[in-house]
Length: 310
Image (tube, helix red, strand yellow):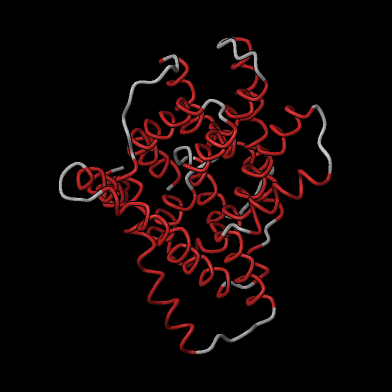
């Protein structure tokens, strides 16, 4: 356990550094620019490199992806039932956001630093695949559900509009798909482009973590403390536990895929869940606090998961 804590501690120290810098020497007006650098340049460069250099066959692991989706579905069902029966969430839109909070991880800003730093190139295929399907299915799916609830039914045009915003304008999706195309067709990148990507990629991990820490805001919210604790428990404990159970029940004998997938599902709620909440003005303040609290608590929970999975 000590080794797991020591390996993950630098990541959280970088998050803490970002938080402290914002409250002391860092000009918060610079934060949007740093976030844009990470989101549009550094992380896409890292994902493109990882996807393009991994054999395409390694990126498609149907049994492992099935286990991931089983974990997502089971977790969402539990959240929906408990939200309605225990926490009296009557509005369907709020239940959708609760399910998203319980299943969507901070893949880009924490998942990539965690798996790439600890497992190296062995985790590239699993990480890239989970990030891709997680962003497409969970973020895109949540928006489609909310649109369907608001319109009573949903046609092809709203779905295409959501896919356009969620995928075709998403640098994480585009860079990953571009990397997969390069890998599948065994395309050799020009040396200058390859060197540029190699220069950008190392910046993704430290700057992403710094920005995550600088973005944390602790504020009072209307969410019930019992429900806040429940949602944090779901994201950090129940979701990875159900994912691990799915791997074991399906008898998937691929340690790297299993450990990487479980650790990615054990991460705190991702900031994109808050973006969706803001867009639809649903469960917005509550989502913000779930993101913050789950991020802080994950130092302990992720360490425990790493120890248990080793």
